[in-house]
Image (cartoon, rainbow, N blue to C red):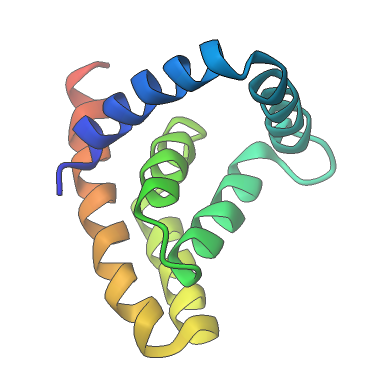
Length: 117
């Protein structure tokens, strides 16, 4: 799977859905923004938590979104790897299989981010 491309495709579909259900998308967007803004827990750590949950619940789309956001928030590869490790600890074998998706996504988004900076 190409996670960078998947992320762009999801954004287009979500914009389309937003046109059909603007109130729900507006409220979800506000929830996301208010939850992920830095407070006592910095944004980077909130995104790492979200990534770990995405792996443990086996959601490729969530992995794509949160990997993009966690790299933009400044997480290092080692921080991401350690988050993957915790997700596997909590989710067992199925989480390990989705950890491979997160690892691929990290490499793809890191390469995309480096090309654009």
